Length: 347
Ligand code: IPM
Ligand code: MG
Image 1 (cartoon, rainbow, N blue to C red):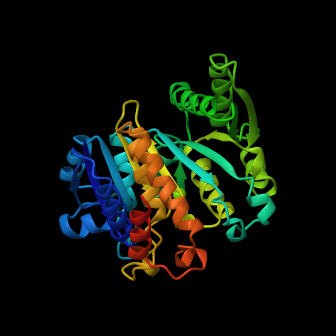
Image 2 (image 1 turned 135 degrees about the vertical axis):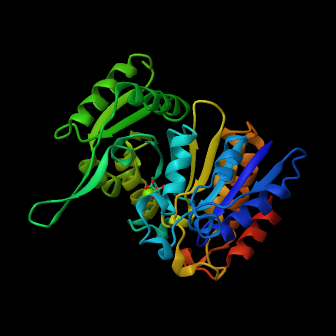
């Protein structure tokens, strides 16, 4: 079981360090971890945010544990050399098209939600975000107009084939949960969304046991804070999923708790916390590693088929939280390493 560990920038190395400690504490016999540079750290060391050696390692692995990318030192580089291109490149090059972002309120943490506790307590949803298409990967550019001002553009598109494969992931996820799937689009304005909606409806014929609904993204953003308990599985495009998943994290209470899986058609997957590199707290030992530890649990489940070990990690995190182990993100004073140790003790 070969795992590529790509810590990246900012708090990435600190939080992946704790996730690795948790993985190692499981004592799995054939686990082989290999570290490589990615993001701003890779740019500084090798001149590129996604060096060929890192991409080759990721390709040759069974799964990738990813920290975070993003470094203010790199903000003025040309776009192709910025740290963010590393994660976008990995998603595209490895065909990681299906992004699973679960959001659930942990018992006892309702008060940390930006929502009223009784509203927050009902949150248990899964955002299935398409990750290989949309405005992220369309033709884009900046041109200077005759009057000297600039115009920027990014082309949004989805083909039926792209929508079909993510829709299947959404429907299958719904079958494994409450049997409800909400597809989020902007079909009242965007042609891209019309193709999206028509295609999701066509795929629904294969899943008569799933109850499909549709929602415009502006309404979905509103409903997510009004009554998040109505959502179970949400399937949506790359840009809408990016925005709604950050919003969902604040409904849960801390972005430091949300894990994610980015899956390909096979078993190869990349697992990362949904938070970023948080340069303001990097190197201070303050970051909550729970989102990365929970991402490692998803790695065991989705890429290695080790459901029991995944559940063990999730139970240890839940127990640490209910025992009052809280990082600064949850008003506590436990540092990164202390939280990692608390999880290891509870495994
Ligand atoms: C995310 C991040 C990325 C995205 C950035 C870092 C490119 O916000 O994973 O949600 O926009 O997809
Ligand atoms: Mg995002």
